Image (cartoon, rainbow, N blue to C red; front, side, top):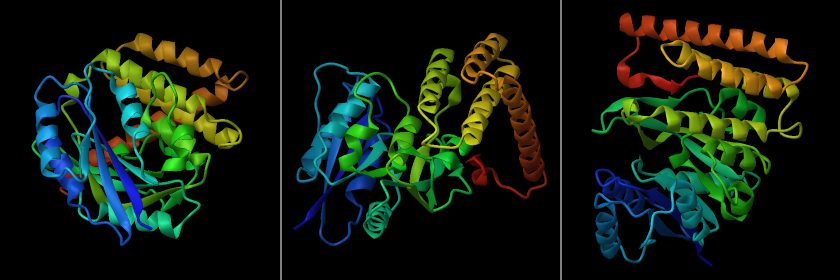
Length: 321
């Protein structure tokens, strides 16, 4: 009996990138005995993305299935809609502006077949600019298998467009309502076993101009990240790991806002984080200080390497060890 892999693509106003994304999917090889469906959820784009998706689906009608909508759902509801429609035993996700390298799906399916206890597997990624120019790599130092303590200690160091997970975990992974961040999905998956990771650069992650990110969306990401971190309990990771993760979170906010940002945000988030750990405030503040020192020394080290010509710009690690 043949098995089915579902690929879920979510897109909105990505006409410049969506055909590259879909082409990289339909040209993937699969292991013997596997078939593929590609579900594309265009959330009522206004730039012609939907026209490109429909034309592509006509050329690949046996595989690609556009999920049309008459009104915009928003990113969270659109994500739920596409993943809910997947019929495969395994599900892979790709954002409409990212794309895959040859062999990605085959290697991930073999990984999951070889390790039945693994709930999901990710890959490393090359980071590209809007013009597909390589500007770095996504992460470094991630083991082939890791637990929740490792993930919250490193932070959100996984590329969402590299994810492949087992479909029977879908309801446990994706919140039924409200907003969420991909980090929250990974934490939920980790309650079902250690996550797998392929160090190969099998995903291409597109990094857009960060000047377009507004303060409001940055705050939303922080709120969703904190929401995800707050779901981590004693059964998921030791108290020391959870405290260190909170300290790193607050240090990250402080580092950004102290560099010409809004100092009120530092105070607001410090109050939130400290309230979450009664009796441990002093330890948390020490952890924040240590995290800031590590980040500063690492940044200085990377700058010196670049100036000395020992590290090229295209080898920058966005989420280093």
